[in-house]
Length: 50
Image 1 (cartoon, rainbow, N blue to C red):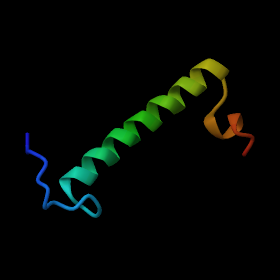
Image 2 (cartoon, rainbow, N blue to C red):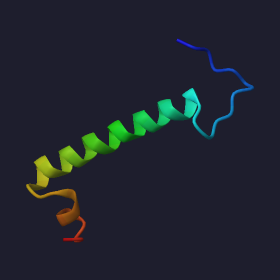
Image 3 (tube, rainbow, N blue to C red):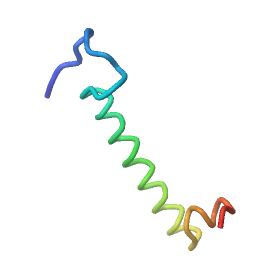
Image 4 (cartoon, rainbow, N blue to C red):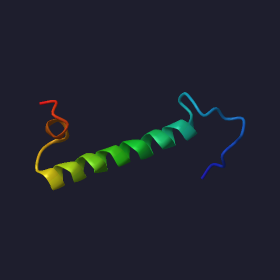
């Protein structure tokens, strides 16, 4: 595991930013699955977009 270097930027295509992007994408995907399982309808229907 690479240590968090203070000189490494927090924006752009850096390892730090890509790790956070992946983590947030996983949280969003799991949240969408939970909404679908609990309500019985997709996320877009739940929000009234379809």
